[in-house]
Image (cartoon, rainbow, N blue to C red):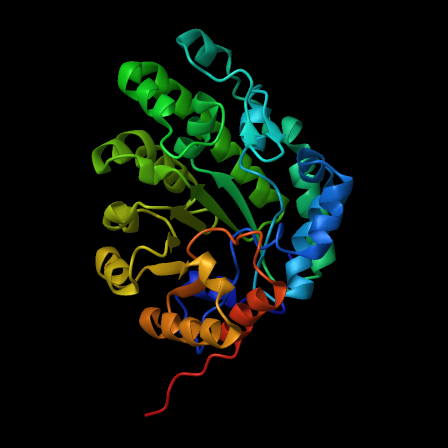
Length: 346
């Protein structure tokens, strides 16, 4: 792998002392960019994910247009259940739609643990093509959904605020639930390992729906499976975990082999530092809706965020994915505010 021209993101993951933090944004390759919307009009969602030329083109857009310090491969967490033999569609104005959700032990038995290099070869090809386009400018991040979040969609059959069917399956059919979670975990380990072999510099696990569980249930049905992935892969590659709404588990997460923990906007920098012991690299936590503020306010709040987290053991990011209605110049103002950050001189 050739030497990176900008490796500040990897330096932050390694805990190096830095003058300013690196910056990237979750969902940065997507729906707020006009060039992305043009491709969206021509190609449906999974065509964009499954066509390496399109996925790599989309991945590099924010590097060219916004100037972030890392790229994250354009894909979707739901390519994993697709590879496991579960039908996943993307419906306009609804989002993910699984016409045959998992509801019984028989359904669980039918779920496959696939050969990821075979079923998800297009992801690996997209990585190769993206690395060519990036030309060593910045690192490339690969990602997967945490097992619990994938499980939520596989049981619920669509997005939900409560994922009541997914939770009910855990509480009424715990043995079946744990079997399915283990299948997802095993597939995700193989998938992230294949991504790393294809060339990504780091990986992130997205546990978008961990926060719907109580702390005890989060440990049983989510963290125990994410931890398996981190335990297996943590010595092979830098692993970041973003578990939205799960601040209560930060202490336990920080004891694992994870290299960084994502923080959402409901948890203060002070609490996150305290709960993780002060030495863990943290990532976050600008409220995505705050990017709708006037640009001077975005710049002010970004500086304040960096001052609260510090410049070392910190990666500036949003507290969740960027919203579709964010003006591009507002996203760029956020990135530029981080890149131009200078510590105050007293």
